[in-house]
Image 1 (tube, rainbow, N blue to C red):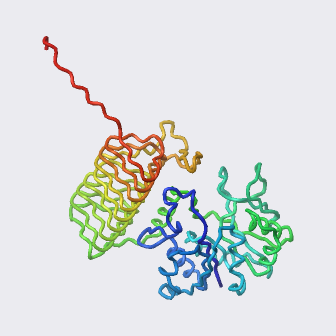
Image 2: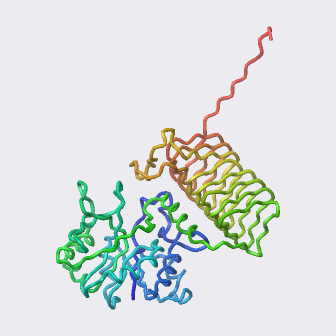
Image 3: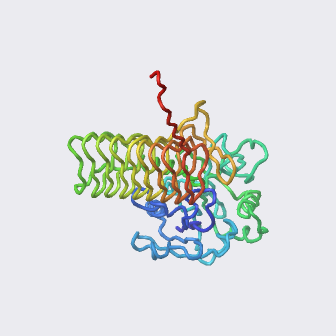
Length: 420
């Protein structure tokens, strides 16, 4: 069976990591997100893959024909971003029969392949993956009646009864492509074609309660982190140094060249990448991934955080946060991660407040950021790439890319009175 992966298009809502060629190329646990997805497909027996990519992307250079991963990859270039439907039609000459359509971050797909295939009763059926996710507008809806989907609604104006949210994994066929080709081009071209196909009685669904992945905003990387940590096999490399006076508990992976010094405490699930340094008396807990070459300084506490490669920290507290690559974070950092009222945190993305659906969220830091000593960040603050934050700054709002931000410090000197 084949799979089509959609890897073109912009990632403007993925700020501050929007400038990467594609968000699926972020490295986590030593592999890109895309590699995790390709290996998930391979586990499910899907090894014939078509990747829809943007011009001048590095994916072909990175992956070649896929033989290194035991798969076969064909590349199709989408020169202009015109949505899922347009991207899918570009692959038509490569499609042989039934196929899966998904994005490059769905590395949980091996959980669903067999069950979605079983749901297909008729030759012309397509199968949607659905989930009962109440209180979120992050997905389109499918209206269901029995075992059939009767309508697909991308942006409903009111609550849709007898419905499921659509998770972006689809089992499609060549007959559906004919309907897609006849559907007028628009922003929701693909969804309108699905709706038309559903009205012909040719759409069924698989409902799941399993964890599913999305990658729309930067803090979604924390969900990806959690998914990967749930499936790790604990191991400690013989090429790593772990002090006998360090304390390790739970499921932990420690890679080659890592150094864990005296007094450090690591509570799994955690992943410590190649050549990571964990200093004396540091505390790592509640789901941390520290990528290759990063440093967790002495007496540093890091909780539920994704620390990207070659970023260094000193002392302080980082919680529920995403730290980009090659950052330098000074002593006594404090990432405030909970509102005083304990309510949901609303980060600002593209000048709009967006629900994170989290009541614990620290800071999102872009790549190559330098932060001085004693910086404090409020919940959900986003710091842009290549910025410098001076010492003792209190960040109440987002910081743009490539700026220098310093706290104003006033020094007052008073002479003692003669009576003193």
